[in-house]
Length: 327
Ligand code: PMV
Image 1 (cartoon, rainbow, N blue to C red):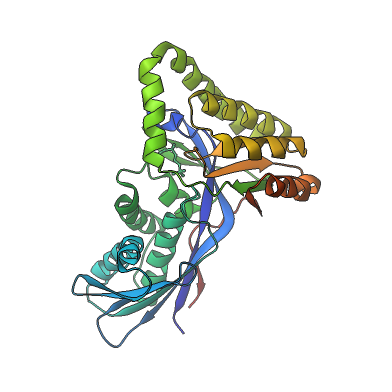
Image 2 (tube, rainbow, N blue to C red; image 1 turned 180 degrees about the horizontal axis):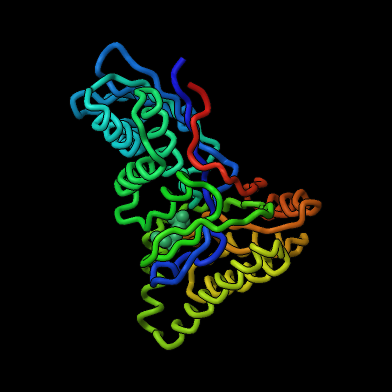
């Protein structure tokens, strides 16, 4: 019964923050996915349920009626899902009622792109349910629209990686380029559990850059060099170099003020436990860090991050972007 679609979460491997000023960044889709199930209803309601957030309710004539938990929070969380479903209905050309159930394994508000993964999965599920022809570019466009509700003016990294999967090189002026990487990239992701708004972190870097332009300029250039070297290392399956570059990238991010104590504990614990490299990922100031480790060291690194107070899990690259799981 119904159609199930899924889409992956992401981590930024290199280049966060500096990407805002035109430098390149490398983003990786991970094997943690958000799932969306879509079914038709007999009435015209849009009924939404999130299993993991324990929220449910429905939109009817523009208002949101909650059936579970806090109405305001639910409306906020469901707004992008509603937009994604409505955009597909627009293409379909007829208003039909839908049940949409979301089931996500991606930690929320941790910089892993959970909202984009959910929006991409919903878009694909509703499209397949209604037999609407949609290319991946169409899914990307709708997911990007939905993300604008959540993040204002996002770069588009999250919708792109959730839709296309794999590894993408991203730069503001040139957009996305898939990187052909054959190697496995074994990571431990450590969630500090500290929540931070991305815009505050971006503003912090802007402030430092404005106060010390001639100091920060070479930092930006170094970040670009890291990405260029990392592209070679990825091609050559050179995990050791990647690890070292991650350590240098973290130092640059620390330098512009976006690490914090919770991240430092986890990054240091991972390195001590034998990780090839470790860095914060995404906006910083809390959120998540990533550690790269040989397969036989992964458990050790995971345990060290846990002992240091983080919530760790092992993640791997996935080449599968948004996909239909079941029709
Ligand atoms: O933590 P996230 O996934 O929201 O990452 C933000 C990445 C930044 O480079 C800090 C901001 C941006 O828009 O690229």
